[in-house]
Amino acid sequence: MSDSNLFSALRAAFPQDLDTAAVETDADMVYSWRDLDRATAMLANLLRALNLPEGSRIAVQVEKSVEAMMLYLATLRAGYVFLPLNTAYQSVEIEYFIGNAEPAVVVCTGKNFGWVSKIAFKAGTRHVFTLDDDRTGSLLERASHHSDRHEVAVKAADDLAAIVYTSGTTGRSKGAMLTHGNLLSNAQVLKDYWGWVSGDVLIHALPIFHVHGLFVAIHGALLNGSKMIWFGKFDPKGVIRRMPEATVFMGVPTLYVRMLAEPGLTRDVARHMRLFISGSAPLLIETFNEWQTRTGHTILERYGMSETIMLTSNPYDAKDGERRGGTVGFPLPGVGVRVRGEDGREVPTGEIGDIQVTGPNVFKGYWRMPEKTREEFTDDGWFNTGDVGRIDERGYVTIVGRSKDLIISGGYNVYPAEVEGYINDMPGVAESALVGVPHPDFGEVGVAVVIAKPGVPLDGEAIMARLKAQLANFKIPKRCFVVKELPRNSMGKVQKNLLREQHKQLFG
Image (cartoon, rainbow, N blue to C red):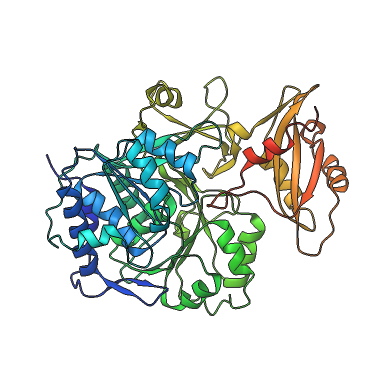
């Protein structure tokens, strides 16, 4: 069979001069392309020497480091399946993931070795290594004894490359199975669509245990033979300081908000930049506009998920249309996006419904959950994203929320994103979240939780009174709380499940 190993495609894109810089870290370390090639070979040889069964999973819960990225690449190179785990996960969660995925190898930080190895060995994992972000640990120690030459494992496009567990805001986390073909097709489409050119330099300031930092950012740079400026942890001042040496930045909305709080963010410092991309959570229109004013750059917002990698994007090239704040742009080339009503029929242009997608980027299914996989695909093979949105007459896609966040109050559908939009536009409001809680009369009602801008006194009753002048009565939240902060996951997404839990007894 022809080789479709994603690593082969990434390796083929390395520049001819392997001694140039591939990664520069915030700790002043420089890794050349040759370093990447040799280190991934040694790590791949170590994995191969363990005589693991074909298709073995390599589960990894470590702090961000260039060596952790090399381990990911080495796993692809050796033909195994990479399983990244969020560094925030605690023992109960890790027990579930290891029990569910049955990895052959687990790699964790030195400080967690005691409890992680106990869980892993109990579940039947044979090999547990450590890897820390200061280039120490048993993994590198063992790999150093192996050859720095390695023949890349031949893989078919349909072979598994990674399993990414969804954040599981409802029920158990599900392992999305992504193939070499899913990842490579998406990376190639984005390379063209986002206008990657020779000489581009990426600032990498995202975590690498999820799709955005691990796949979209790393594949983007490697497939273009582009240098990365690497931050172990996001540092707003540090990122701004490196902008004159870079051209591309990918972030979540929180990172843009934190950079806007820095006086050092100016048009001058950003003038060499080509593209700022945002995703993983909704970008407030205020952040979008303020970034444009401060830097002269228009953030490109896009939409993706663990199961599909990237689906839509605002245009990079002005000839394809403008970048519209509040939207996630157009379906990417080769990706189908449609909006369906509850009856499964296509809804009229501009109407809200369930977003369904198809394309070479769409995952193979959920790991060991055939029924769940069947449930999430339509009879004609489209994937139900679980997101609710609309497509306007120009083709721009707007996400209005998750279907599970939909509030059905007295038989009427309330879309939280719509109500949040009105609240966020009010003077003094920094951000808001609307959740549905049980109610004896209406079945379910909305409760708004609002953060005020620094130094602005806000009143929940006054916010509800203003909403009454703007929206139908069934959309008005029954209570509104002003709080200091909203609960978030590591990607900056608001954890509405925690808010629902907190307020579920409000109406008895």
